[in-house]
Image (tube, rainbow, N blue to C red):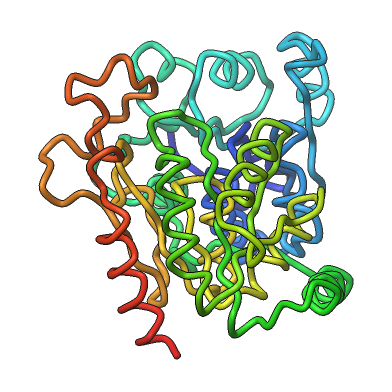
Length: 342
């Protein structure tokens, strides 16, 4: 289908989750605003990802839904059709989003050639998810429309309130930013998580010179962080319960942020924080940090990295990507990196 940008006044971008994935899709918004300076540009995502997008100056509205609270595809479809979009860009392409786009009244429907779901779109994008970084994967939707890409930098917009909160928290807990390392030991997949005892040992090694600030998001993650805190000792501090942007400000205050492949890892490098990302079953070339002040740490001896298995019991190599990733190796890599960044 021929795309006529002069016919576009109202745009919807769809990316339901997760936090890191939504953050990595934000260059699409800025590029759209560049090409459509006067259009209404809305973004549909799940409610838990909303904070990634708030205060984004390139967006008109954030639309959210919550599957856990019974929000149905039918309700979403009705609401989308009422909005009379000219252009819908589906950056996810699962059955739910494909059906939403297919049944919408939008003139231009952009999405990826994922099996039968490609039928939902009249402008189809060849998926390169196994070839290019996730940021570029998202931007391919705009390339399919013939648009020039003017930025590929993901962004989250913090304000003075967030930074002031982080400053007060550090001061109240006697934390020196130059001597504080953030740890994020949790992860959405069990296979992406480095082991608790390894985090404790790493924390003990660094706690002779640094304070360790432990991050968490959900209650189960808080329990894990508390156990690691107890194992490290008095030089470990737990962050309070905060929303995503306050978490990002706390991360940004640290000398270095060490994390599994999770949303907070992306918050770290996107906000310019020194970042050490631990990778195993996910491909760091496709999902890793892109900043010059970031490193990826992984078990380089293995050929099965990037398998994308989500359950340890499905791994034929007994989760060696994390089990055999030694504390000393991680410590040495981070020590060399942090010394370079002084």
